[in-house]
Length: 318
Image (cartoon, rainbow, N blue to C red; front, side, top):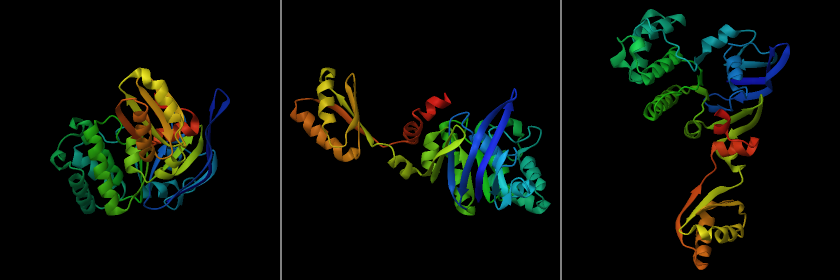
């Protein structure tokens, strides 16, 4: 569905070249849900703009939905849906008018446009707002309208650029439920960017990480997380004075590393946290060290980014 080879984009700022994207290779199969992650300035927005034909590359090639983005951008746009970061709807129309107009822009007949609009309004729970002015919609309702506009022509491939930015947690959850249901019904390929790593964790089957204009990781989430050096085990002690002794005991566990002590909390990484925790609890109990709680935390996508770049994705965004 997406095939890019050495795709690149250089900008010129005060006669100085700025390489935003540095020759990336990318392949996305039909039906995949791919999360494209990276900090601000990493090149993900520039890549997305090139793949959606909104920005011409300065190097390399790409085919999107079977069409060349440079030689046949109109055919690409006919086959893709694109939901950008800003609202794509027009305040001066009613909800059903906006969706119907979008369908007509794609050459859909009047009868089919009305039927498709009604179908999407129902699927995205916007039926009660059909006659309401777009300007009067809430943030979550307007975002669902943006999704409907991106899907009105049944695209093979849907690009979602920060689709849930600015939404409250419930609206975010509802939005992804709608997208997942429609994707299951139509087998739509989804390529998304998001700053919410929990979304990428729960929605995407595959994660691509870009930094400094280069792809630095690409694969299923579990595969990427396996590269992070172990689960994080934290032990909260009753007496902070026992922290040093507890850290010493933890350090003697097989595969334990990155041992730290901070107040009444001792943390360490180990290959299998669930297996190591009972062993450390028994050892601490034998040493007379009382525990308040223990916790095992699996590697997250932010841990993946930290291990790859030496910095947290969240810190980079901030």
